[in-house]
Image (cartoon, rainbow, N blue to C red; front, side, top):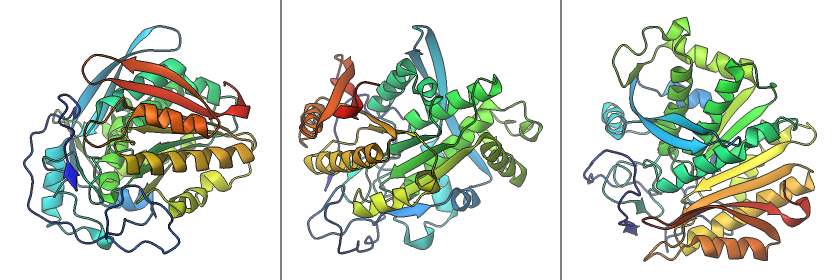
Length: 379
């Protein structure tokens, strides 16, 4: 199953890339205990949930990364206009890396240049759209700027940001950038901060998600001597072992940790999530923040995403964590059946308080909602 939403402006990448004829190898058979999965295809197994380490992804980076900058105008919690510039690795640069690797992806990883770098928005069960940036992710960035979750999180013992279906990870990139700015101004009271980035395709996490965070750090720290000559060519970051080491040292000294999970939304996904150190610590009263954009574009996706979100919300509630989810999506995905209204209805049926925070009426109608479990009250 492959389809394109056909909405002008949905894909905010500038690349015009034609579809390759390479086919994806079959995915590994998931465990028999799996009761639901993210994007089922009759007769085809889904990719099993798998943890990936930052060090493994860093070791697979090329010697340089090409990128562009996305400007987002937002209004912060103080009603001041602010402009955010987020880097995104160029898709043609992803293709160059794949060609350099001779299309051989380690550890049985799927070949994504079939659909991911082609004309289809989604190839169900093979590629789920993560190489592209979507308008709803920008809507979500604007909402996060207005809500100022980072200030609220200062009262918590730790902050855990989970981006489901992250792709280029614009919302998490925005939060990472805001944290770095606060660190530089000595306005961030250091505490454990975990970013858990989840995408169906491991190749998306490796080739765009992690490089985007590395780019964001480098662009925010150009004064660092190790980066002095790293931007000698505009739109390109030259990498060296010293730069990678400096990035890791920054994360360690700032108490920031990255984790990556690929595969289907499933009970195994939940087990992977709660096996992470961020969830095994005994720090009191943590904050868990889930974000997801364009994750409910079919009935299958809607059901699995909703089940996953509320499983996490319920577990966090049971552990006395402050937990919330921000979900951005189109009002209706024509031809495939998902809708934001259906998610709102499903969330309220599970006892959630759902606040509609943003609505876009120009072009394709979109919205952003905030969900918490009812007895937590509005926070």
